[in-house]
Amino acid sequence: MRKFAGAWSVLVVTVLALAGLTPAAQAAPEDIKDALGRIPGLTVVSENPAPTGYRFFKLTFTQPADHRRPSAGTFQQRFTLLHKEFRAPTVVFTSGYNVSESPNRSEPTQIVDGNQLSMEYRYFTPSRPDRPDWGKQLTIWQAAADQHRAVEAFKRIYPGKWLATGGSKGGMTATYFRRFFPNDVDATIPYVAPNDVINSHDRYNRFLGGVGNDPACRSALKAIQRDVLTRRSEFAALAAADAAKNGYTFSIVGSADVSLEISVIDSHFAFWQYQKQADCATVPKAGGPATEIYAWFERVESLNTYSDQNLGGYVPYYFQASYQLGAPESYENYLRDVLRYPGRNTSRSFVPKSVDIPRFDHLAMPDIDFWVKTQGKRLLYVYGENDPWSAEPFELGFGSKDSYSYTVPGGNHGSRIAQLPAAQAAEATNTVRRWAGLPPVTTGVTTRSVPAEFPDFDADLTLLNRPRL
Image (cartoon, rainbow, N blue to C red; front, side, top):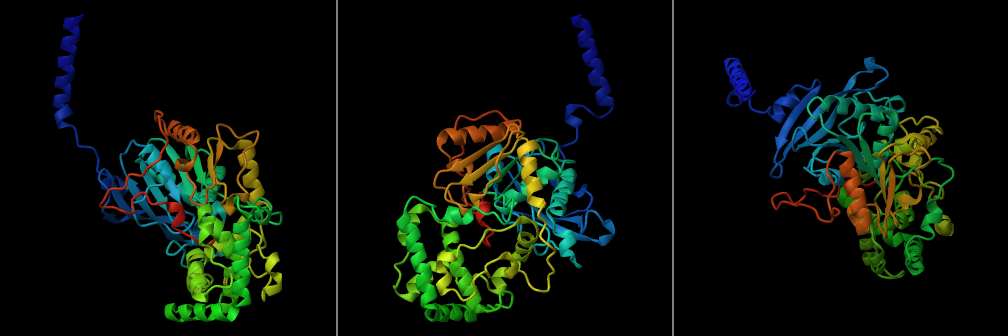
């Protein structure tokens, strides 16, 4: 038997040699750039520096302007690709806004040490059709179809496990993608994703009325808001000087005064969205120097937040909030006696009048919510205890299989798995790794790997985009 086996081995090697397929003669592994060149509709715009062990590409991908009407034309959607290894897990990431052009890794990408395909959301410049039809083309289904085509295309070169993730509006987007195309990825990890099921029944103001563990902090925030609106002319002069310096205009909301008032109203929400409980100590005393108070607002919510120039990049979000997503009610009743424009702090106020907004789609969010509760599989949500956007979270139901939801104690809109209590962080980390087909680790993700030559590597992608969501 051994002689036969030896003879067979010699015969196999001889045949392979004649065919030019001996190990020494086998072709080298395909280069990622060559592999990208084989994807129809994909253009490699550039290859840029990346940390050791990675390659980083800026890409565009041809997408239909309307997936239901191919004759409506196409547009070029911006992608970036952080390539690790062909058979490594791949994470598809979107912020829900513009794509970051730096080689950042989302937390799931760090956990699985894999590839990351990052996508710009349709209608965010420059990923927009030449002849936009907002009501038909800028819907949650159209954006999910963008992701579907992208994942299908990149599975040609990445055959391993696929995960979807995103923070804030990106977390919403990842959920919608999974609802409409449930089999495209193996699991979904949304961060701080609000779920405004019934737009007219909000929990946001009740949440803001009790957020944090220090009533004195909430009182201080309200006092500084009232102070600014009572001394409006002083702060309007400071805001006007900044507006002139930066070339700000206010045609969308109507005036600089409207912008100032809405910014002051929003500052309470914005404080808890991005600050921490410890930052309550930084809230200025009402009646203090206007320049000091103005500087604090610049850190929390600029009084020029709603200028045309600051709003312009986020009009697609405000359109979607007005059409399908819903938006929080304005936390302003306690300021009514000092308001000049009550009721103006709505998403429709931030969309130019030239853009027609269809009648609100009351079925879109209940459909998503019902799917999560009854059919959602392998979903892992992360929320922040003090984040106002966590007031209306996605909630799992009787039909949610192998799915989990975690809340970071004291967390804000930058909450992530690594900030959970140690046991929960390890549990969530290993769930993500299990879904990616990887063995468990004994500790949670608590640190970031930041190569010295790439200080922005692993930056928190949740905070790269900010209207209020």
